[in-house]
Image (cartoon, rainbow, N blue to C red; front, side):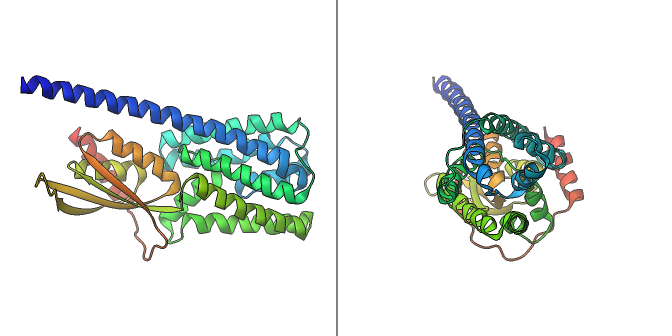
Length: 311
């Protein structure tokens, strides 16, 4: 009788876990689609007509569109292709598929909104409302586990090799874009663009509820080695092991600690949920990282071989 109940509980647990995964997947894709549409609306109806520029590839595309007289969506897709190609080789396929879909929807909707009448010609209203809507759109896309800009992919890859955070790399690139925009379109447009950028950044934080550039993650599990290997193979992030003991169960537990970027958070959650067994995870903001850890590609290949050998 006890065994029958045990099997029933295991089947029920697996069904609940599968249902939760399906709900998470639907919610993830829903946020990506809605976020891409909102971001495209903000750019075409508020920002682009008033020469207020976004950062990254989108900002470069907006500047080029002014001179080439080509639809913004087309330029965004073309400029993002090299970044996507780099990302396919270095990052997870699931993340890249979401990036391609997000950029595709964004480009399509931008072409549609471009034909509509502009929401306003007031520069202040365009800066504030455009920045808020863009922040909501980008925040939803990021929360869904994707991004709308290829520079974020490169920034993530560079941050793994250099002792520079993802946020600093992106900020440096964006400041350069705003300087160029100020020279070409007037210093006031550069300043309005910079103001819009800060508004957008704050709104993204609100949408993501404290979604900073880096997060520290602590996982308590009884499948520590398996989960650590999955994180290292999937994200290229090393994990620190600690040992613990449950107060009630008195069972030995593995405690894993790692630091990831905001764009890697969704994939990390997927990896944690994919490993069987009991897990308890806490996620915290990281205000500063001191020191540098250089990862070895040779070591990663060895971990992959060991993982394949245990399957």
